[in-house]
Image 1 (spheres, rainbow, N blue to C red):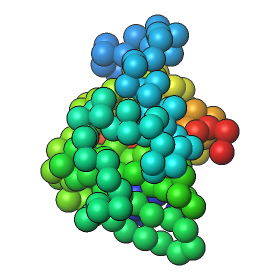
Image 2 (cartoon, rainbow, N blue to C red):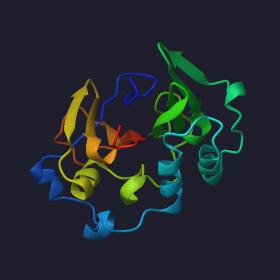
Image 3 (spheres, rainbow, N blue to C red):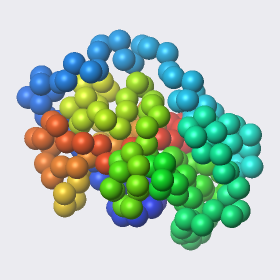
Length: 188
């Protein structure tokens, strides 16, 4: 359940070989070699932290979330045996804690599952919520796994700790938008 969004079964997308050739020039070959943004470095540091850890508070402050009192968070969901999601819908963000430790962070596009704002800070590997499915495949290569259901498909890069849900019903839509991105520690 931890790689899934708290609202519904997770889904995202991938582009076929023909689609990769139509890549938008927003992603260059140097993307994977470029140094990560300080916000992404802080995010990666926060993964594996407890709710009261300064690393988590620092990352949340960097992205504009200053109310980090999780005990009073009103938008939370619990799933047995020990999973809890704390949602910041006004920031396009959901934190997934497993046994009290930050396991996965979900980033949302506005209008998805009641999230009011698209997450605006950078994602790992110089990606952002504005990229399309074809951009992801071009930058990261073929996913570790992929699948889909209904109007959404998903791409997972388990070795990178990344998963993308895309607004598409087939893998032949290169311009499909990211609806949700999940980030976790790849060694988990």
